[in-house]
Image 1 (cartoon, rainbow, N blue to C red):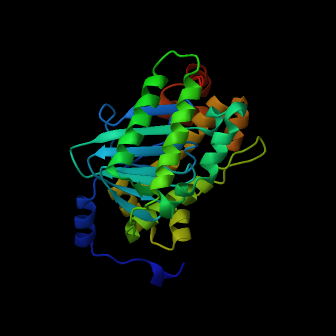
Image 2 (cartoon, one colour):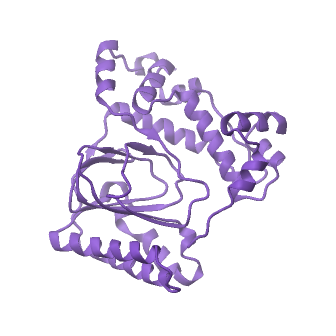
Length: 314
């Protein structure tokens, strides 16, 4: 490793910078989440967090009140009322609230929500230009913001109602939301993230790339904290301190949390046997996997699978 590439920061300076930064906990979406979720920000407080790759959901959120800092990839946006953001499933994002006031809505849409009868809407999302990280936040006029807030409120009521055709109504409102945002077309100015956040982003990206268990023959090639630091050309102690100060957890804890999340996903979203999952995740045997899982969740993998059946996609 080239020692000249290792950042050097005085302890006092690093501690002061870390102290000013609120903790942004890394959060994974529930492995048995519904395929469509919509919430009102007034009733669903938004916390400071980082969401890594493979969320599987497209996320769209609109602000009517409050302020916050959104990062998508290596781009940072300072957001406020009358703005809407589009987050692609494959991008690392984070959110930091900077005001006590809050308002607006957000929705999560899984590709499976569309089924065969709405593939045209899924294609619309896939081709939508604002899911690119450098175009992800749109400034709306007051009239456009009011219209989009109305579309969200309609989807919110339909989602909680009992109409047999509520999915069709939701999809219509979603398309109107996309159309109104595209008509606005005014991208919010963005800035680059700090060097420290860049290291955190790249660590999470490398961590996610380690978990590509797509079939029974694949196996996770799990790296150590030192190996991740070597790939990023930084000292392991520096990276560990940086990650811990921003997220509240060490590199080792993040690696174990990601391993646990992958185990949960495979248990709920596949019909693989416990032994196959154990092998795919690189454990020495089923007993070692069961011991790890039980220590983290206080239940066996098979008991977790029975209790965490996938929720309805509606």
